[in-house]
Image 1: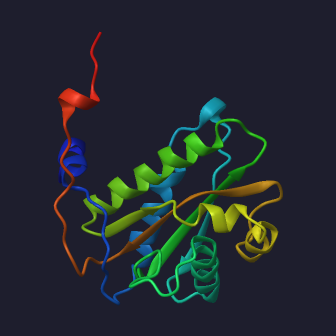
Image 2: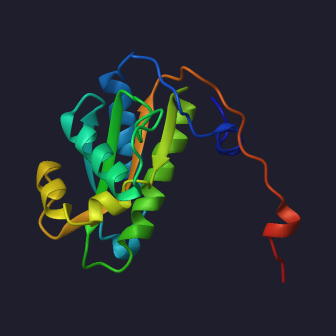
Length: 176
């Protein structure tokens, strides 16, 4: 088993997946990793909508994202044909929901890496999910009342590999 630091160092965004579906055990581990994330005031307001990659609502989301961005035909859809997509929504009236969803999705991404699964944290559908079709998508994705999209994550078995990104700690960190 890896240490948490090893998993963090190894993780990178996956943009290519095999057709192999996640097992029930893998999906259960990932969902529980998200549910175990801390939330402000222990509100536990994050809702997880799990979709198979062939769910038609994902195609509709892709089309709306492309329409808003004026993209005709991108080389891949926003989740890169991953077999599983999880959309996180949260209480629109709670100030810390976006932060809480980000913590949950990072827990899920690290758990996926530990399991040897690829993952891609997704924000690019924000405008589609919060735009003129917001109510339609919220209903189709069965968000609880007064909940709205915060972030999404795709999971699957890696068909491609990518080195983790580099960074410049000297430029990005100030220690006072």
